[in-house]
Length: 272
Image 1: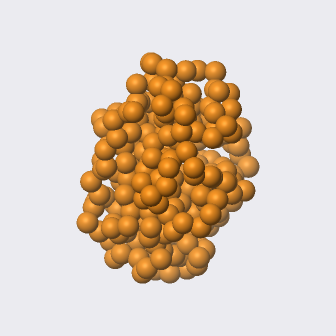
Image 2: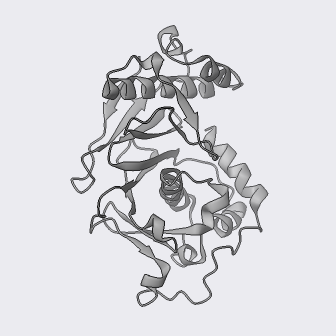
Image 3: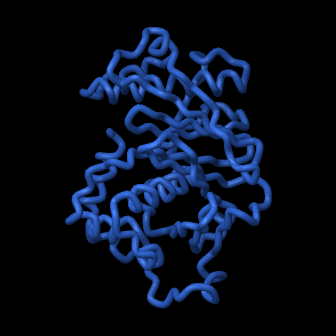
């Protein structure tokens, strides 16, 4: 088994949400004890990766997820059955009251569990070699016009913003590339983000920065069953017009401009 520890979260995040950090040694093969927990489909999926480090991340993360969920449900980890939605987000086959999400990068993986509603998590290495010539194009494709006004100009800013946006879309169970322009994530001075969108059904979505090892950026998003906290705020665009200049805002702007470039970036960070 790999080292697994629960992260300390803000007291303003609901108690039914927890995030676990898995530390991996991607230079060594996965122990047989980890592989034994996976279903035959999960084993086949993991063996498709050509690089050992990708196989390690896939197998170890899924094995740790099975252990954590199994402990919550008091079921053997290898007895759990998963299905995926139209965008590939996994969930338990039977209704359990537990939502979960995972992400991995480099030698770390995050596993988020929630009994309070939907949850999403993302972690990325901050040392991604983003070509400066491509940064402007990526920003135009990934960020909404509102987000671009905060002038994220350096790769580190891009990665930190990316994890927040991806965690939100994962919590909502949506495709990443298809919905990048549907929501704006605005950084704040504290751990929370402000989220701007025009979908009433997303009203309770929140996103928070996570404290992870140096060299990584990570974020947690969740949509609780209860009323949202006053700290992590989500706004509909129609309610924000008095606070921010939104003239000319177009959710689809840039969406057709650089799809190939963005898809290449998504594949790059997913296999880092």
